Image (cartoon, rainbow, N blue to C red; front, side):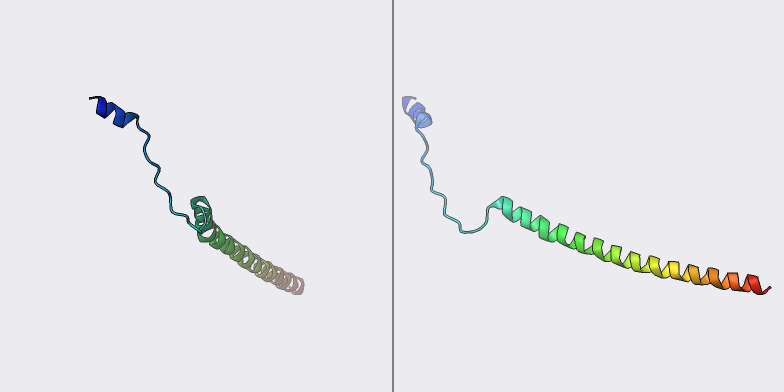
Length: 77
């Protein structure tokens, strides 16, 4: 029994970790999330914003032209 108690009390040997020349796990996760999620999301947001602005401008110009046509026809009648 004494031997088993000694075994429990003895500190365990530390196994040396292999040295890694890569990035830490947190940095790898940040890059994965940042490049895989945020970068495409930002690109899509900018694309939809730019496209929406172009479409809105085109629609506004069409409405102005339609109102001018209606104004001219109302003056002629």
